[in-house]
Amino acid sequence: MSPLFRKFVFSILARPKLASFLLKTGFNFYPAIRRTGCRVSQISADLREITVKLPLNWKTRNLNGSLFGGSMFAATDPFYMSMLYFNLGDDYVVWDKGGTIRFKRPALSTLTVQFTIDEAELTEIHQLLAITPEITRTYPLQLINQKGDICAEVERIVYIAHKSAYEQKQSERRLQKQR
Image (cartoon, rainbow, N blue to C red; front, side, top):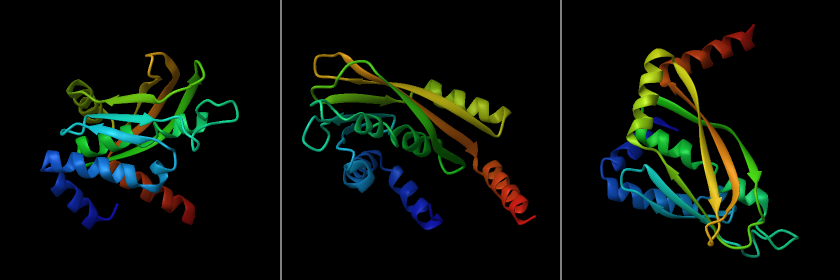
């Protein structure tokens, strides 16, 4: 992210309700998220809770009439990374590193997934990063249908590092490539 855009984003974050509204709108209109078929239905003012809904419609339906698994997995993609990025601040680098999905039953209706980061998680991240310059965290998710049944379980793996350590690692990689 460019320094000017980063500065703009963090100035908006100083106004939580505006940040929540703009982030929800931005997510819902961002082409990569829009094409998954999911919609962000709620973002808390402190950007620590996000609710995403994935409807069963002609865009998300597979040959069997249930939700396409790729849409289900993609609907969980950028949210933990974004939440951590905005909650940890400008001194950290956050990347979505990977994930897995386990299908439990066919999704024949709209699915809901809840992303939550609490103060204890942020405190633990800060404590771990005081010991080591980079960490990975795993976040479990459940995609739940309208009846309350779990249709899929997802694990998202997120990489977090001090910005200075990350930049040093990147410059070392560039030097190795030049040799």
